[in-house]
Length: 98
View 1 (cartoon, rainbow, N blue to C red):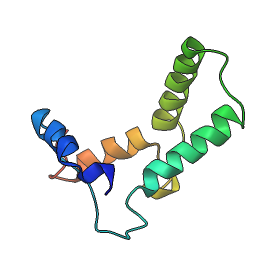
View 2: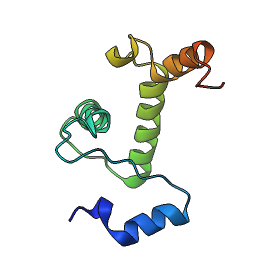
View 3: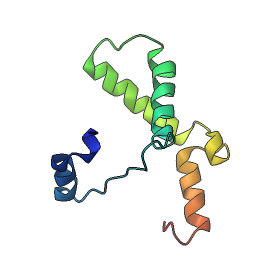
View 4: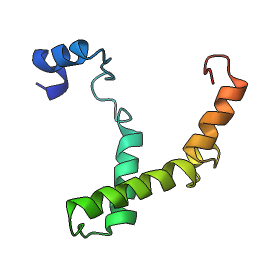
């Protein structure tokens, strides 16, 4: 049984007001965006190595995350950065309030 379907895990989600996101079995696209992000992070940031320490790792992750969200153009977003795309979407869609 997958850990995401365990009763205890689902109880914790409910307790914290979180909503479980899970597609149907055998859906290979369920985590595609997350897997893509981690693959890029490992390739671009770690380059097969490791960080010299926890503080350095936290700093590098914060920098990479800021770069990824604010500067890096993503093909899935029409070559906008995620934050730029989000702002654009909020201005054109009544379902995405600013």
